[in-house]
Length: 367
Ligand SMILES: [Zn+2]
Ligand SMILES: [Zn+2]
Image (cartoon, rainbow, N blue to C red; front, side, top):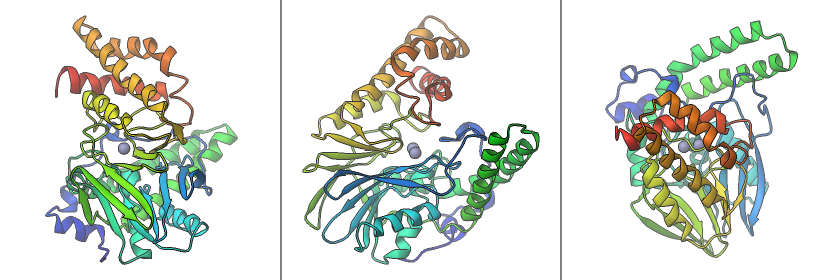
């Protein structure tokens, strides 16, 4: 597979780099507080979920990485999702090499968001015959300038945005008196600077094969089912299901944090999760957070449906957006705050206001 520079890929899509507008901070998903402690070196912890099936759980980084699912087969390795940058997927590849010397033969991208596919190029570099699989919609989104927080044109937005972010970190370091916070800011600044360099030299590596609804791979003695089950976190979420091992990798359609709704379809999402639930699995490898039992699906879906019901009720009663954000945030806290705030990012209070706004916009105003 030929790997092209980002500008060549944009040109092939008929897009000029300069024509891409800069990033609105509102569009950002998965940001950590500037002074949060993040991992400089340890990036992933491999957790065995079934025989030859691992969840690679991502440590908190200033620029977030997604988890990967690593599936060993007799013919080679299948990896679900490739993180936000080639350096992270290179580290992942080295860890996989500690499990098997067989090549990575397939990468599956669960959806188009930046933190799930920007490392594809590292795997392509290890194996010229690599197949990259995504849903039809995800492949389409990867080429669109306005699809949301991911895709080839989005890399230009990230590049445009990073210098301002770096300046802000430098200014924060100057002002910070607390030595621990200062140290964290300095680590995050180093991560931000190297991320910008990686973005500039990125060779966007796109799916070579797509799935419209379902694809069953008989992969070196293992059955791997790929399912598109409806709109949810995006319009093209792809689920990787191992029927024999009873494991599912869900991308961000089911995570162990608060959901990110900006590119999502809240009401469809609830329905789609009900379709996911019909599959017979015991363990979930989510897009972010730890490996979870099947029961986590009902908790996560419960948050979405309670949120939708609360926003509909409050707007029917004439509440303003600001009133709704405060009231609903408090109202749902007893049931969801603890379970949705287990990590330093994607916490309940960080996201509930934005979630209310998105449900109001997408479900009530139908914008
Ligand atoms: Zn993600
Ligand atoms: Zn996502």
